[in-house]
Length: 302
Image (cartoon, rainbow, N blue to C red; front, side):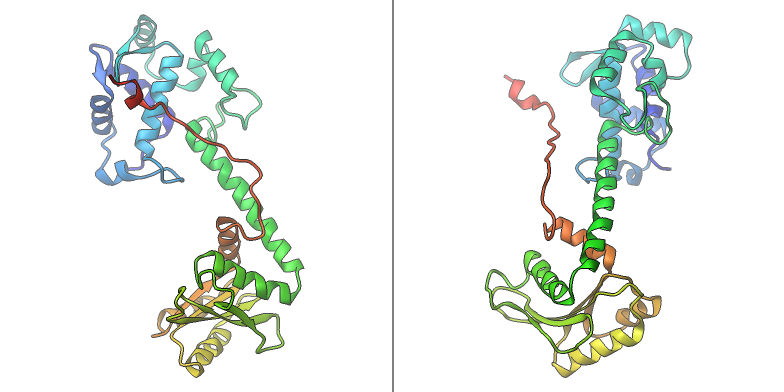
């Protein structure tokens, strides 16, 4: 099964502490058993890949239950239920954000942190937002911004001249690490009069191997015949590696054809092109940087 949603952890977490103090490791193990999670489930990572979904969701359970004064820290990573938490357990069989909002301590925290910022009120139970941890909300917001930027970036590329596009492709591959810093390691060679390019770039700083490039600034999908022509051009150059870049997409036949070749040809479509441009800062600039920090427990150890 998939890892349960964030709020599904709240009540089981609290109930585990009903009769005794527990360490975070013991709580995690008990919750894994409670939800019958497999090793594969426990290994699923958040979108950023910085931590597992399980660790993230349990971590935010601790944060929310502490802010509501349902639990307290006894010693490092060891938790105890409070009288407030015990009273809640005695009268309830479930626990959600809307329940926590009835407690002034948590309501004040939620208001100050603007929890569920995609809604008009922090008490909202919008299923697409309130079921996410703050970490997941941040990652989702970043993905939304990146997707919007990618769409705008691709539109901007389509507005440029073919010559500009030719140099953009070479600039991108140099930024990705091909050709090193040698100004002669990558160049555009106009072999055709269409809106694509033929370019050559060295695979490394020493120039031990060349990669041949072709790009199509198209809106229609690139079909198999065009890729066959490119593969033939590689044979004519006695080359074994090529990169074909388009602002559109590739037909299924084109992709299947490439999969069966002895030559190594990489196909980059419009969405991948935009993604790489963002990743390697080609045509974009950083507007603002947010840092997510955690307590350094080692600092407080004697």
